[in-house]
Length: 188
Figure 1 (cartoon, rainbow, N blue to C red):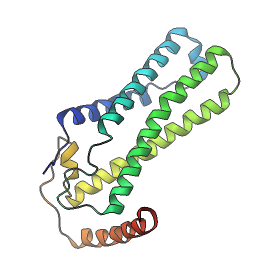
Figure 2 (cartoon, rainbow, N blue to C red; figure 1 turned 180 degrees about the vertical axis):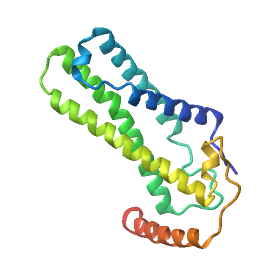
Figure 3 (tube, helix red, strand yellow; figure 1 turned 60 degrees about the vertical axis):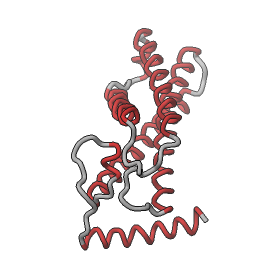
């Protein structure tokens, strides 16, 4: 049974995480900064590289098993939420450089629509924060429960085995009700 992502998948995941963090850290605070042609060209180059890498990552990972490494069969409702979250992460990560390039194009050509382009860019950044935050929180929660999913992508702080406590049993009872509802309403 396959219980871990490939070394390439892990490398892409963690390298891209660093690239994303760098993009957030170095972001342009004021549109007037882009009047500097060298900064504008760097931002365009960075956006294109970011977009190419996220698209390569998407196409490489799109067929990877969701919740790989789980010790037990995962509920269909759980898989639905995990896949939807991953798709929203990819959507936001594709929209970030795309809207950044749109801003650069509007700025370069002197076209109208900058306010809308900036709003879309800010929305995609916000969506990326939210979806990546959900992804990280879910990963930590899964690790806390000892489901095995953490070990499939994260090379440190290894899980030992599935935990069986009253708290985890209660939380899983709530989860299963939610997953059943999702399965009844959205999957079937």
